[in-house]
Image 1 (cartoon, rainbow, N blue to C red):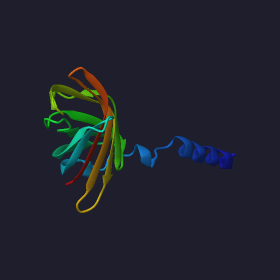
Image 2 (image 1 turned 90 degrees about the vertical axis):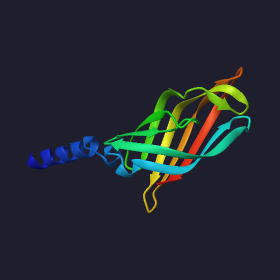
Image 3 (image 1 turned 45 degrees about the horizontal axis):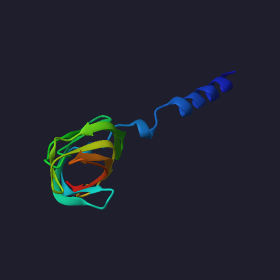
Image 4 (image 1 turned 45 degrees about the vertical axis):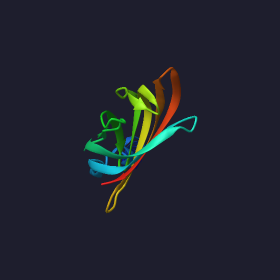
Length: 147
């Protein structure tokens, strides 16, 4: 009987116990990241610029700030280890973009991947849409930076 109980306990631990995927985010997500951001529309128009994003991390939660064209805005991320994701709706303040005086960039999903090292590298791929000047289009954003 003891043998069966030990096997049942082992099965429960394997099936229900904590896994590496539920651990905290790597603390290296925190800090200042210097790199290049690209905002691209489905028609091929877009812009690439130098960007400085700032990360903060606590457990499984991270926040990336300065994600909008005017260096404002924050995306809340959830994850573990070296990757985190955002899913929801975040709209940046209206800015001038590609000849339009007032455009709103909105994010609906993002994935951030950290490559630890000296320096560490952060890669973020986000998607959403852009609306303004009587145009609505899909938006793909990438950020690649080092700390």
